[in-house]
View 1: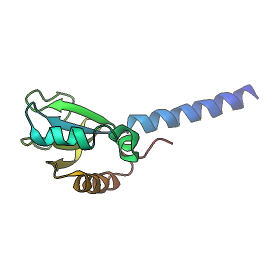
View 2 (view 1 turned 45 degrees about the horizontal axis):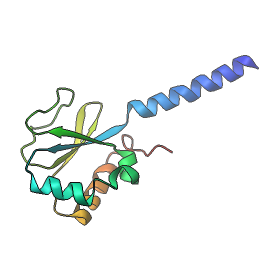
View 3 (view 1 turned 45 degrees about the vertical axis):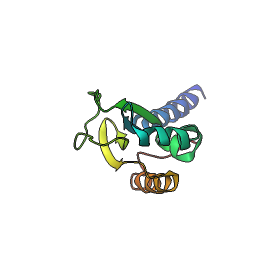
Length: 123
């Protein structure tokens, strides 16, 4: 019976780690003084972590003038805000700009749905 429990626990844990290893992030490229970043912060930021989308792709913020080395962008972001869907340090999709909450949620949903393996919500 102990071997069965060990096997079950091992299989369960490997599945958990496999899911987290493939988890995507939504990287927000922003900069000081960006009006549209401030508007996104007012309209979306407080709710984002509590949404299904926020669970599927947790938010990570980076500064336009200090881009991190652990992300491979398909091209260097120019506009702020730019939202980049990233998995394993590689860009999957991008949304440039912010034109309001309805536009944002609609396009974000499209981005996430285009990459279901990377953006499955943790149950």
